[in-house]
Image (tube, rainbow, N blue to C red; front, side, top):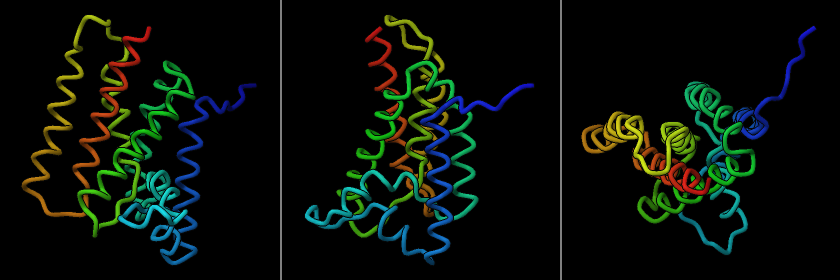
Length: 186
């Protein structure tokens, strides 16, 4: 008899935590996302500032927002966790959360940010580097950067919606830089 294995602890735990936060937000009528799982400019003396700085990647506005991020995260994440290890993947998630959180605070002080899309874009670019040799730039990295990041840059100038294109771009840059750095550490 085959058994079900918790094959990717960081990625699966991230998805389950995000789902729990989604349900908590629903049960609190939006209070938890506003006060705990969205990042926005506030005083660094407020202890919740640091929870929001990391925790905004677990918050999602609704089921569609959650599911679109988690499908891509669950598709790319287990392979990355197997390749780089749980600790490194956790660090990449934390770095992405902090970079995108601080960018939001500094550049868009009156706007709250939530969601895992920065982490998803980090994973996409990290995936495109995986398996390449140190003295080469993988064509997949260039193609993915043009398609995903180029699309986000274009959308940032031509579209007015609630999507943080800068978060996608910064997440992708974090993933690409981490991938290139981890590759050279072999």
